[in-house]
Length: 312
Image 1 (tube, rainbow, N blue to C red):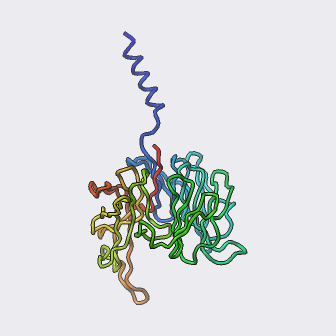
Image 2: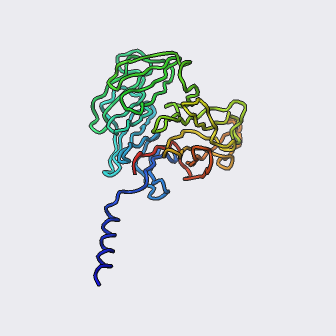
Image 3: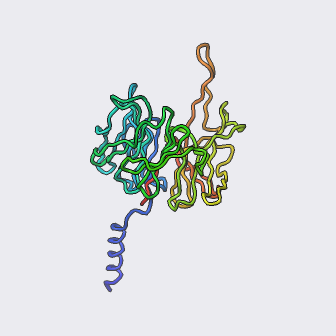
């Protein structure tokens, strides 16, 4: 009887055509190396030299920062083709913090001191696929570091510069501005890109914040923790324990958070010498945690700056 053989052959054919059911995660390692891995921990692969990776929603491309002694530039890597390089349409020599829009055809990033302009921070937009369509959002927003995020509709950008919140259209027009004290989400997190992310349905926000009075593991520094904020009620809940210094959270799904962090076991103390104070060698790792703070688990060692694709 041939039916079993036909069915087996058909199932094999389906298996070869069904899309991958796991997302791709990009991360930094060693440091200054960009890697990718499947969300199940398989198929880890080195992509290129660089740092602060941001993988596009499809999981096919990575934007990253390429730094030298005198400059920081936005790089672009095609994972399938195995190619990478600097985006030449972006002027200046100090750009960082790339973020993809939902459609994966535009990058938001930070840039400083454009040639021929006053010193200050701006938000740039570029088409990384074609390396074209570069433009800035408004004029200089702040001499301080900026934070910014795409809105979920991809049609506008929210930016915090100094004590002011700005909302720009994607083509660069300033649509509104107001004092940061009026912002619904007061704890924005810290770091160069502002580590807070809105959930895909727009009802929650995960953010990183310092914890005054709580010491980081081993280090003489303030600890860092992750919180989930319900944007409707305004209430926040801590989702990481005190023994992990947690940072750089991203949503992997509606209920799962990916972040990097370290514990006391990940710190090697370098004894002080005549010419140097005591030092600390920290090895970060990636973790998963549920939205409610449960089922915390270590995912991959020697990894930081996670970024996840939206689709398998």
